Image (cartoon, rainbow, N blue to C red; front, side, top):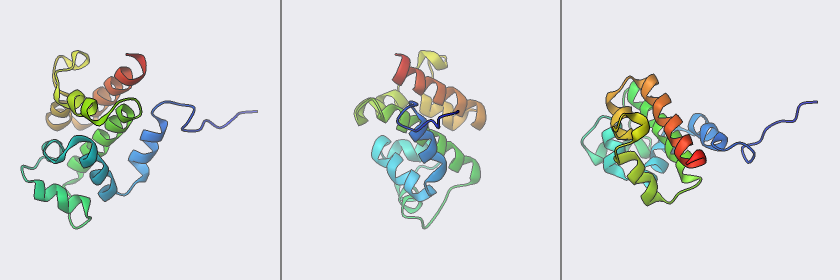
Length: 132
């Protein structure tokens, strides 16, 4: 007999579930709370905080690739938030990360291949949160 694994039993599972289940506007609003508007704008490929506000209130959306980047950023941030305060999560996204050739996770998400960058950032977030 197989027992279902709940999000309370597997670290990061709740973060993953939320990243695919929540509406995009809610993802952006929560990400903005965790990372701040400037970092969300950077990852989302815009310079304006106003764009982030329109995404968070559901009146606008970035392109598909940037939406996926923001969902992946939310997943990584939510994993980190399970263990750390907001200041630590923000620092982690902005700082050089040895697991990513000393590049900042935000930069890897923004400038790298969307899928490869997401894998690297999420793996590094899990490692930092649960193995570090």
